[in-house]
Length: 423
Image (cartoon, rainbow, N blue to C red; front, top):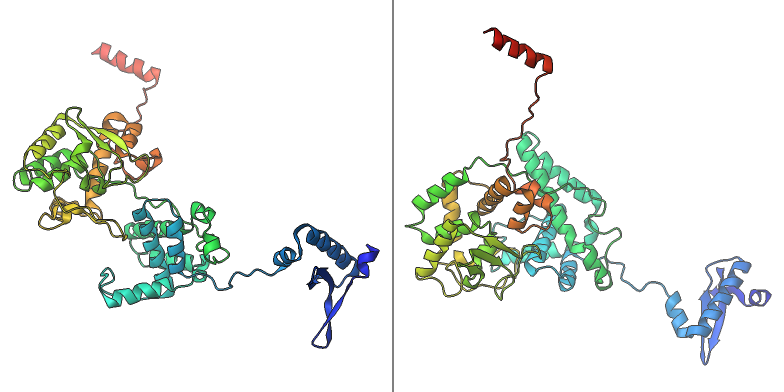
């Protein structure tokens, strides 16, 4: 150690000695002064010795690279830069990631106070394009826990006078936060997002608390009565609407599953619909791939539809499927002149189903019917959920009567029998 004490010294920079001690290394024709980050001679000597041993192992250039300050830019990435980088690393369905990116832009814009234009969804609008560019330019460093919690509190406070609307606002805010945060999921981070863009520390939304973004399904609609109304109103006059209605109510399909369902997936002799990946469709998850048993009425409805000038590929008539390159869903059965889903939604509204997702209500009614007859696990499999808690929380209306019945005490039973004998 005494040797290294003689090798450490201050440097003279701009005419003044530095407080920290340095050591001077040579390798071939190269030399370098290395700051030892201490004014203590003993500590500096130990550090100089360790650096020399390391230099002999890896060379002077590599040692200098190890000791160099972090070259990463100090400016954190923007929302747009993070989305572009994360999209290349994500392994979820493209439409799922686009939905998360949409929510990230939404919350970033609202936190930054960027006003949404009237034609925000029009991709041909210059105003909308400028608005999206402003959203993408928001620095990730603005998405702090404090900012996100304030954003959530203000959303909820706007409905403080109505418990129902307040609960709805809470669930919506939690859902937006959960989806926005998914852009920075563990899998995307593990894939190297932080190496591609400069992320803030802590990450956006870190430390933000949110609950389960689910609403308990409560329905006053009688499924049997609704089906009877559909037969009367739609089956003869609007057969495509009726067919779409049956796919969601009788088979419990998601709208996207029904919209791109092919005849090849329908096994009429086996009374089964098979949901799996096709060249036109990718299931929402692994569990969403499933076989759905059909009753005789559903089979007959599908058999008639197949015999009545059907589309050669798809169960529902519509346009050719379009690639999903935006968060807004695209349904082929809504192409002109069919407008199947749009018109079915309008009809459902006349039956009191004016929920934000009326087509999804049909799927939830289907799940409730399966639960009523066969139990929660069968309902989970029928709906294609990975977790039974999802089925229980959001897809099952209370349809089973649960009561507690206690037998009266023995002395009361004896007394009642005695009264009966006296008569």
